[in-house]
Length: 58
Image (cartoon, rainbow, N blue to C red):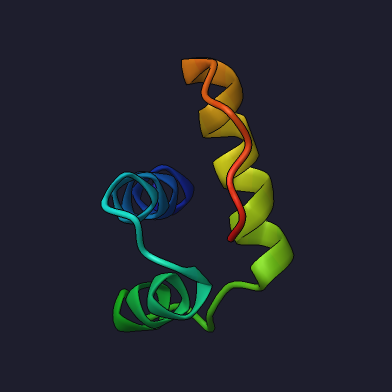
């Protein structure tokens, strides 16, 4: 359940155009230890693949 919530937060932040640091801050606000830039990038790549979006810089 926590993983789905985390993914949803990251997806929404990505859609809103947030960079890695704000995503990390959101994850910490959820009571987790944070997330690395590579983890954010990987999740965003998965979103892009599902939506067939062009690759963006993070």
